[in-house]
Amino acid sequence: MRKLADTCRRKGKTIGLVPTMGALHDGHLSLIRKSAKQNDFTIVSIFVNPTQFGPDEDFGKYPKAFKSDCDEAQTAGADMIFHPSVDGIYPDGFQTFVDPGPIADKLEGAARPGHLRGVATVCVKLFSICKPHRAYFGQKDAQQLAMIKSVTRDLNLDLKIVGCPIVRTKTGIAMSSRHSYLAESGLKKAVTIYDSLKHAKRLVKAGETDIAAIRAEMTGLIKTATGAKVEYISFNSWASLDEVNLISGKVLISLVVIINTVRLLDNIIIHSKH
Image 1 (cartoon, rainbow, N blue to C red):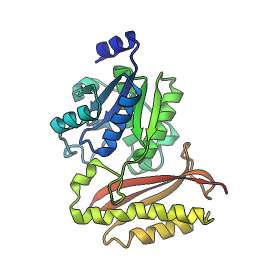
Image 2 (tube, rainbow, N blue to C red):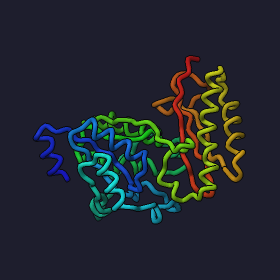
Image 3 (cartoon, one colour):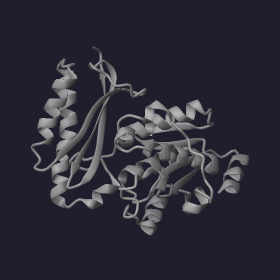
Image 4 (cartoon, helix red, strand yellow):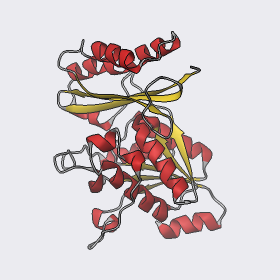
């Protein structure tokens, strides 16, 4: 992989990297298409990263569809699939991790301790191996996007992080590999997640700045779906992710809702002049 990346760079070709854990969906494919448009050579990494899973999480059963992933990635514009082994990324005796700092301690970092440290570590390793000029991340994992931008800046890494919009189903659900865990009835319930975010945006547009009031309305809307459980609804300044008490400026509203034991993430970034 390194030799190929060096050859590309020597020839003056730009390299785009789309890091994934496989089980590709339209969200991933939109990143690949954007990279193919902006770069001469696009690498898609497929690696289910063990260090970002907690002991009770779904690492062992994370959906895998390598053959179809390769076909879809190639159709979307990938020039190469990088599919390393766990031993290749974490050799025997591995002990060095990237600590992303306070940006990784809140939201998903608080809900899943160590998760974002694992994400930061594997991304820095992939950047080192694939040597991209640009790397592409979707806004669905907004904290991850903000964190990777922060890590790249703080460590003086020589690449640009490109954030890309959330891709949604026709009913508005943010695309996720974990949808494969849900039956049709569960996916129907998940529609209320994006509905609650759109409702929050309308409230802000109408002049509402009180976070408690917005959170209460969002929670009430989600709970109209039988069995849907709100894990958290958070309001954070974009892109520092500092928690805010009033809606003002550029604010990330993010939430996790559990439907039939499946954690579903979604978010929206709103701009308030208040």
